[in-house]
Length: 473
Image 1: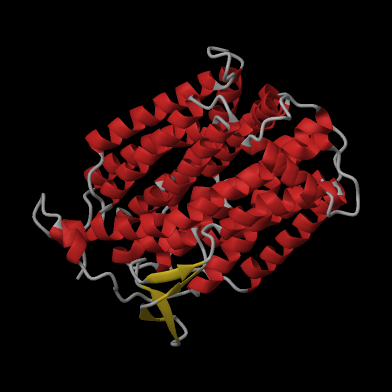
Image 2 (image 1 turned 135 degrees about the horizontal axis):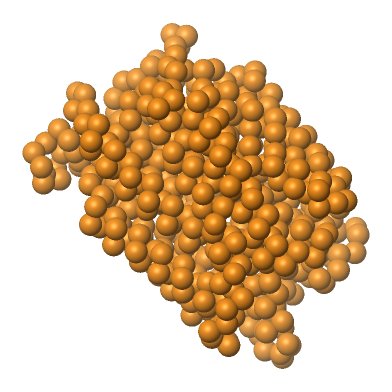
């Protein structure tokens, strides 16, 4: 049973709410990115100064030392921050992986708005813990809570798909992607600037954390006041009725162009290599060029600004498959350069290529994924695309364009077991940081470039273009 289309005026209103709320969320989220090296140094120096205490961080550092000793080459203690940062990055994504299928399933069953507001409650708790984090244990707790409750991007993507037809979907997903680019333009630089303002001696980063919390509170209030329900099945019933959201069958027949396994595998391999590089970049600039948080914030801001320009001028006009193809080639070239740069000019050239990747690949893959999902299980499908790897107790048989049949999961209510969500992001930072300091920068980035060439093989040789050209409007 088809849902009633959203009127142009209502669609414009909902897109505005999605855009503003997601932008607030991502600016808040990116505050911490350039701060990680200095932040972890602060906790290490603060707690390791008293070696007699058995604090959590001291025990972790002892474990890291044992881990480093398993390598054949000597790794200096000054790189503890890098390995610890990689472990924290992987932990956050692992927890996202655990939570993402459940958030997607809840949004398919009870509605996007309800799921998003519960996710925001967790985000508020996470950032509040960061404000109060005078020790590493509290900071770690903030990352754990944040990882388990982060569903904003997944739900924003599902809502954008809910209110877009196939011709509009490419441009709509590009709008969601533009939020990332704009957030990276301002968030890291603003976070670095706020970190230089000390308001709490016991937590030098409390000012940045406090402003981040303010943004999250404003976002939550804005969503509560202005976000309507977008789940298509909710529009089949009278206003105010919630039963239709829960009772609408989750499975709808849809023609398939790309195997969902292929889309997930492509996304997993890309994120595995990209996230490792992405997370190591602030540490690399810190080690290679002695960049401060402010300088790293400016670099990330430049990348975000350039990605924003590309999102608005190029990506939204490309077919999603072409966007993915362009992005993975640019990423392979950037990884190759990062392994060999000796000057800041080389660094900024590589960063420009990464901006092209940021503005194209994930947006394109999300759009391709949304083409393959039925309306009623779109939240779960996009949650699964972000949190890849699972087995299903129940499935919906759907025809591929070549006439063969494929089994795909019905939302996430049938999920009984799954691998780490966003498996690439859960593995990438720790594996890449370990490789960086074991084999060196050249080898690490060369392996990353080779991996991205493998992704290029999948993108050019296996993925197919859906028979719909996205609107450029």
